[in-house]
Length: 97
Image 1 (tube, rainbow, N blue to C red):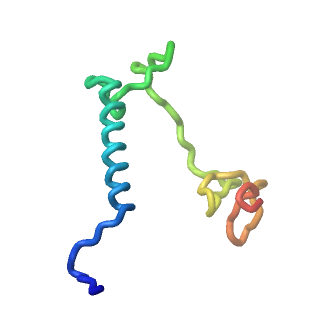
Image 2: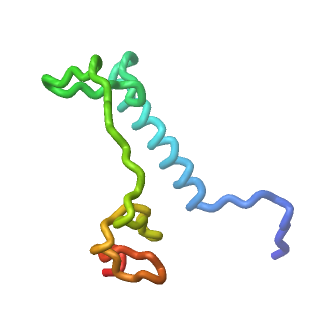
Image 3: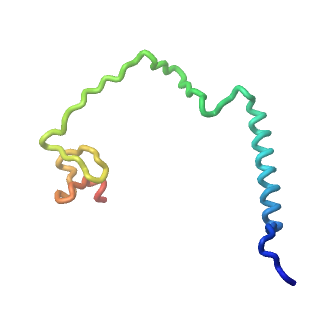
């Protein structure tokens, strides 16, 4: 039997996949309908009980690196010299372990 390679091929797996895709879309639409139209999960706010921090300002004093400190080349944190595990590579003890 000759095969025409120009005709589009469909298999049972493709039909099942399309049917299951349609079923997934229908289930997603049903789930969205259950949430209601006014609920947008990306625009919801997180309310912490008893935590109204709207009037607070963050005040942190940043100090430059001191003479007895180094910056780890792996984690980029500033550590005291006592935490230096490899002085050639400037790696802290936490990153060396």
